[in-house]
Length: 251
Image (cartoon, rainbow, N blue to C red; front, side, top):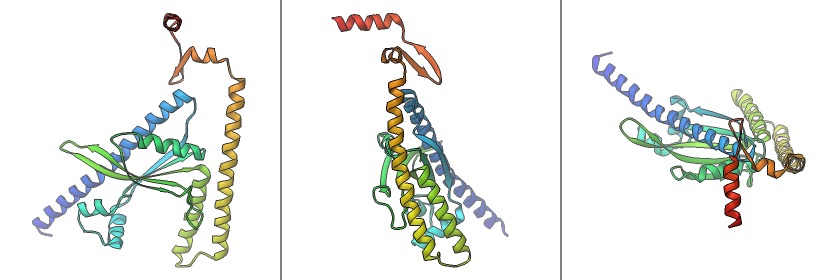
């Protein structure tokens, strides 16, 4: 290998590394924002709407395979334009209502731009798949410029996630053997998707009932309003401030 080809390889490696790093930084950025939103929600509502999150980056090999299938331009700008799911995050919630709460929290951030939204919960795929997909453009501040980077965010319940994981394993197993998935398994998968959806609805109703009961059995409203909780620490509201507020109400 001559010196020129070595230099070309080094330059390409550096460009690819920098390109992939922007997507990694976009994931870091969105993970931080979600953590802040969750803590804010938990402190104000004493409830965490997210069970867990998982993020991933497509490998360069997978990116170029997808680019080839889509017929995109073989360049970094072409990849960025053609492929919007190089970086992906999956957010798993307990309840369906939590999905839309998290989605709205992200949409309300002025410097995040939602480029596309696909609601497979209200409109499930024919095979029964359910999830909310968002393509979000995230600002990434680098040392020499600002990059706008797209990531795909999938938000689903635990039941939806379990079903999707099982479906993926079944398809992977049969694809490895170059076989079609038997019709019987496809029918059972669709039935399982319906059962998962029914379970989500039932769990949501139970959750709502439990919240009502918990509120009725909790301490009095006056006691709750006289303190705040930050990071599991309780702080009483200053008595002088409460008296001042009472005086203002009288006026």
